[in-house]
Amino acid sequence: MSEETTSAYFVKKRRKQTTSGSGDDDLSAQVAFQPTLSNSTFGGAITMLPSKFYAKPCHELAKALLGKILVRQLPGGELLKGRIVETEAYPGETDRASHSFKGKTPRNAAMYAKAGTAYVYFIYGMYHNLNVSALEPGAGVLIRGVEPTEGIETMRTLRKSGEQLRVHQLCNGPGKICQAFSILTATHNFHDLTAGQELWLEEGIPSEQDVPMDVVEASRIGIAGYGAEWAQKLWRYYVRDSEHVSKRDKAQELKQFRKNAQGTSSNKKTSQERSRKLSAEGLDER
Image (tube, rainbow, N blue to C red; front, side, top):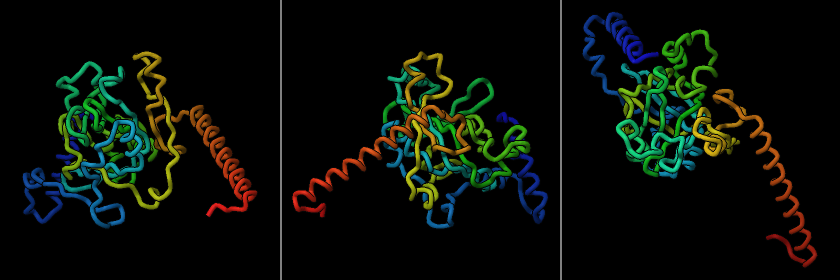
């Protein structure tokens, strides 16, 4: 959806709200609406991620963002929410595939802003992509996959042909996320994600946070043109088995599964050997 189309959608919605009210509503008052913070998913205290959360090295932040909730407050107050399930790390000027590889420019300046700043750029003449600046200058994390949890019907309206899409197809790609959440370069690039207005992140759902996520490390998407060295780096992170991921790497999933299985077997064997040794010495592990 273009910026013009998105604007038209909101104007139409505001007019509908105005005409359906008591007759005293003023369109200008709707346009001047000031967003406020939402409560958590369970209606408790505000759980917006603080500045210190984002002050992490790029790869650490990319993994930490998995399971967090992306929140967009639309003009009029409606909230759109989704759980982040896929990210990509772009650690700055050392990364040939990063927009900051050749240094700071007017386009990538948000990547050099404080950690927790939104870097939104326009690509292919039709898509907006959302990134979050990390601790290192010029480093950022691309939000690549989101599982919609609130405001799904509005997301369908904002997505092109969204009525025909299944829920897992609404936000399984960076451009799709920005369409569904109405995130635009003109309005959200350089946005402070800790300000609590229009766009921010919250803690994930406690029941899911309590269980360690099975995170897959895979190669990034769409950067083959930067050379094999960069295309093969495992700098994409996603939640295994999530159907909201843009593209699964089944070979890498199998490789990591086997590695984890070997590690578990090795740890179990080591523990058994240690127990036998202590027992032979007349000791125990307490």
